[in-house]
Length: 118
Image 1 (spheres, rainbow, N blue to C red):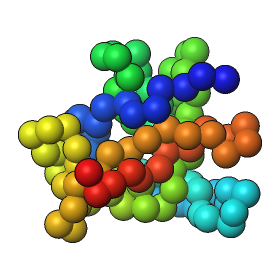
Image 2: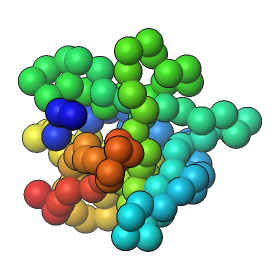
Image 3: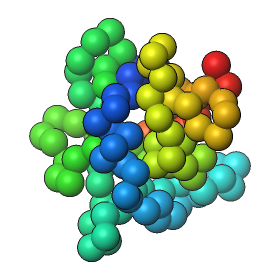
């Protein structure tokens, strides 16, 4: 299964993620926490890759778009999305460092993890 490795983050994604809360839903094979972002009502917001640009663009959707797969977030990725600011180079500035959010597979589970400091 081929998935884009480094979809682009946008200012809209970060603004949408900022008020959301991380909800742990499972663990990866090494025991790290995976989960979803939820709104104030507790409804999950699906992290998906839209097919824009060479690697795609991360986006959040209340309803899973037809033909798209949802990605579980590592808690560190959720923190960067919720608390970061978009930098001029497209990376995310968070607590004094620059990060990107990469897609990966943990077995058959699609995940979004932090890569950085870039």
